[in-house]
Image 1 (cartoon, rainbow, N blue to C red):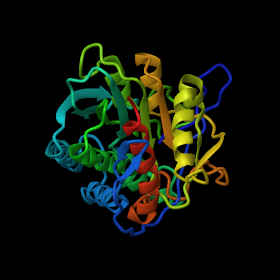
Image 2: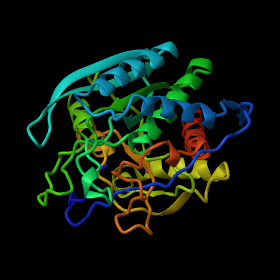
Image 3: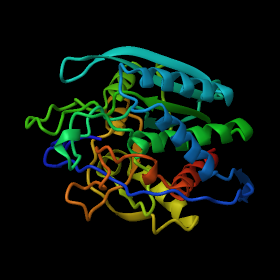
Length: 329
C-alpha cells in the first residue's frame, strides 16, 4: 500500500492492514431475499484465485510474472462471459522508471446504462520496505493480501455474474501500478506516486463518458480476524454508500467484522475515482489499530503470502458485496 501524507486540509491519511490464515467451508445454496436471488459467495473458490495469482510470483510491472498474470486474469474474466478491455499504458513512476502497465476491465451486460463499479489493484509492491530485516528492503513481495485478496474476491464475483446476471450492469476494474509508491527509506513522500493505474483510468476511462451509480474498492481483505471500519475518504465522498454496505453486512450477521466506527483516511485507488470521475466510491480495507504502523505484521514484507489469507474472510467480504449489487434496481 502507500505511505501517509496530507491530502485534505488537515486530514492525515492512515494506512490499512490485515492478519491472516486459511479456512475451508461447505458449499451453500443461493438464498432468496425479498424475492431477489442472492448468489452464495464461495470463499474457497476465491482463495484459489488468490493462490493462482501468487503462483506467478511478485506481480511487479515490467516483470515476466506481471505479464503472465495479466493474461491469466483477462482470460479468466473472458471465460465468465465478460467483455474485457486491457488498457495498456506506459506510466512513469516517481523514480522516473517507465512502467508497462495494464488496467484490466471486465464489463458484464455492457449494454445496460445503469452500472456499478467494483475494483481492486492487481500489482504487488516492488519492495519489502517494511520488512524487519533490512536485507529484504529491496526485494519484491508476493502481495497475497495486499492486492491478491481483492482481486480473488472480484474474480469469484465474476463467476457468479456469469451464472446469475444482476439487474444492473457491473464493471470490474483491476488497477495496475497501485503499489509503486515512494520507498519507505526516502524521507520526502511524493504525492500521487501511488495508485498510478487508477489515476490514469479515472482521467482516461475505457469508455468515453463512463459513469456508475457507485463504486466499491477492495484492498487487503483476506486475513482472518479482519476488521473493516468506515474509511475516511469514503465517508467524505460517499457516506451513503458506506451506510448501504455496512447495513447490508449487519443484516447478514457480519457486524463484528464490518464495524460501524471511523477507520482513518487511506490513500487508495478510490480517491481518484471520486476526485477525477465524480463517482461515489468507497474502500473496504482492513486497519489494525493495535499495530504501530497501522498494518499487520506481513504488510510490505516478504511474509505477505498465502499464510495470511482466510477463505472465510474472503467469503464474508464477497457475500457482502454480492448482496449489495444484487439488491440494486
